[in-house]
Length: 62
Image 1 (cartoon, rainbow, N blue to C red):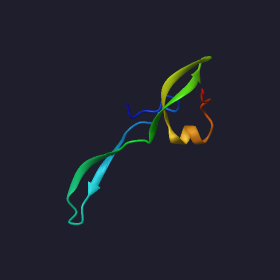
Image 2 (tube, rainbow, N blue to C red):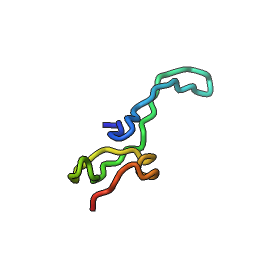
Image 3 (cartoon, rainbow, N blue to C red):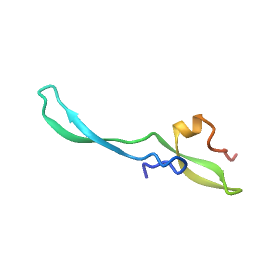
Image 4 (cartoon, one colour):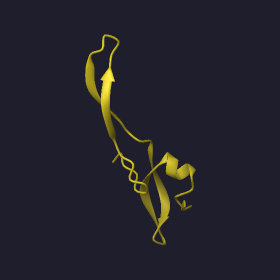
């Protein structure tokens, strides 16, 4: 679910490093919201990241 339907931004992986420098895997999830948007002329619920919402890549349906 943590994937933007507009730009395709998804989960990224990395390594968490503690103070004692022990390393473990972690992930960063994008800030994805479920919004009602106009898709191909019809209003639908889609998952969109906040970057796409802020830059007006999505036409919101009311």
